[in-house]
Figure 1 (cartoon, rainbow, N blue to C red):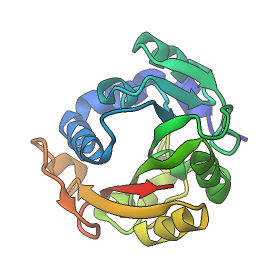
Figure 2: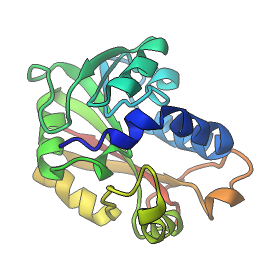
Figure 3: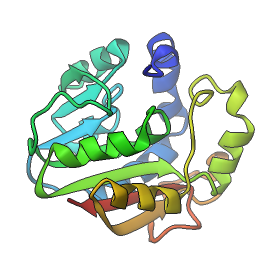
Length: 209
């Protein structure tokens, strides 16, 4: 079952987080934008309220939360109700696809990544962005998990675990960047990203089908 209840009930709190943590959000956007194709037809899987798809210029989004999709439509995104494990698109529909923090909420990681690969064209790009469970923020989220509105039902992964899962799904990981150095309350400016992983809490992997 999709874990939509907290997102349906607390859309305003979700949106407010990105205002309060503006520099974290803008740092994440910067890192994603660096690895995201600038041309072609794109899809965000787990588009939510469109808070990433909007500024990144992604026109189509899929998500199981009706409340979130309503907000995404306000941001000019074409929305489709659906889950990552069974995307409502034909094979080879998109030039690239993006998934931001969604991987920790899916029921079946392997199936979700296989579906992402399926809807991509040959040599299509898949960009996966997530909080590394072995990072400072990842460890803090795990520690506070049961008290969190949004992360209570989340499953966090390490970068190594997701690299293996991507390969298993037929995607070849390539460039990887990291950002969000230090705890969230220490991020007081837009941070630059670095190549690789292991220091920053927010990791972005670009893979090729």
